[in-house]
Image (cartoon, rainbow, N blue to C red):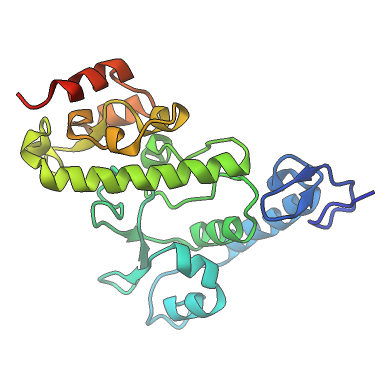
Length: 247
């Protein structure tokens, strides 16, 4: 009998992409993992937030994180904010604090611990990505995408490619994107994919089609969050618009 690689002593019945076996479908459901997560939660309550590079009570600096946690450092960009606090990007690409929009927000110690733990145990959880607000968390396609580990990774790859295509399109066809002049904090409008990235992934659609300027428009942030992963047009409608060419 093969035992769970996470140390609970139970029989292992589920293989993960990282070559480990677990007693449960998800790493977080293993009794040993639950015990570890409970300890992490206690740490979160007992330790201060990651704040400044100057404070003597600060638990971790960027330099210490880079030295101790190379996997985390490889995946996440960090910088010091105006008051010396450690900052990161919001994972929701439409957020003003996202990497795509050149934004940052303050990292808490709890967020750091959860993300670090997720990266160390690549077994299909939601990744504990960084979000600056609950609204951004609920609006992001990657949040709570409960699928098998391989599918989650494939979706993230697709998500990044679409964002790259969208960035190229936005620069080249800026003036052709509906309401693009309203995008940003002032008017509270966000760039939206009419046929969603999530639906594009599910239906194996070329990222260039999802990132095409005719699939882009700016809508209010509240409308964008309400839309979430849903598409506002069908694939047939989008392809028809693209095939019509420029007016």
